[in-house]
Length: 275
Image 1 (spheres, one colour):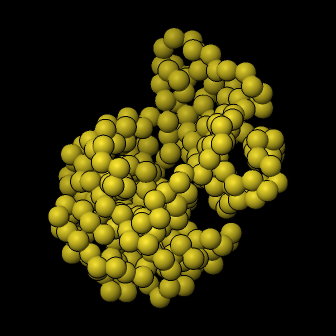
Image 2: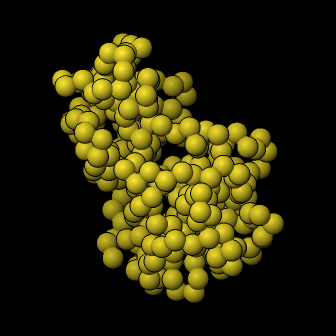
């Protein structure tokens, strides 16, 4: 599948004055489309709006974005959609234009062809040397300045490594370069506190709600690498692959578990049951 895109509903390009290009001044969301239907659209749009509001950017209406997606995706088509909203054009300098008009980009690409082993066996992680810095004002937001993720992803070239595990500057587990992370200890499902840094993904949100359905209590907290390495199961999640079990990181190897598969089954449903 060839990448296709619309910029403000047209095929025009962005200018060098766009603040997303110049400063990373914008937000984005990535989601799958199945048979022409954006999966969990209401959740993704709500999070897009929340992130825009946090940066003081006017979020495009759902009608506009759904219209763009419909133009790019056929009724029976499966695809990956990335939505980018920037603050819009501005002159040189950091000052925000008082009447900035946001630019919206909707990009369609093929769903990733993940190795089948990621689902049947699990994922191997690289322990990243890069440490995430603290910025509470941006914590949780899927903003366009992802240089930390870019630098972390440059640390490995082995195609057998699925993702990189990221710690913060104090050594707390935060996330992976393209996914959120959960660990299981007995009937407790733990995920990192993202109030200082990291991205709060839609699939993370859904798993937090699904935990009770699976008989787990949830703990959102700070924990370090030794706690993760001592967990009974470790699971990665994002909106495109659902959930993978982590089988190896930092020399630790886990036996096969059931949690990732159970989560994938539930995540396929459009509306996850609330806790």
